[in-house]
Length: 95
Image (cartoon, rainbow, N blue to C red):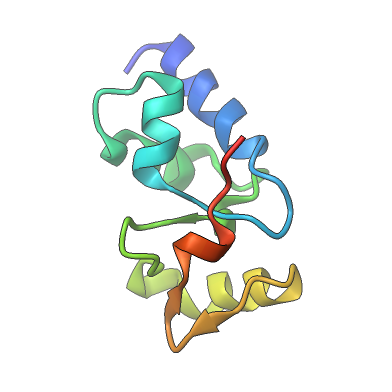
């Protein structure tokens, strides 16, 4: 991945507002990334200073190894989950 794509992904993640979520695919599409997996890679390697918790799978579920923390952070922003799934129709960021 080139540096421009990397920075666009970071910019798109940063722009998801408090109380809203986006999917890895949403961010990839906005950043022009070839696959949502690149978004996951950027977040895992260089996303500590970003609102990473606002990015979910297309199903509305977090990745298992970060689910508890992610859902806790989302709940603090008013994003409520039904079990371990966030209702994307209600909370998805659309601008």
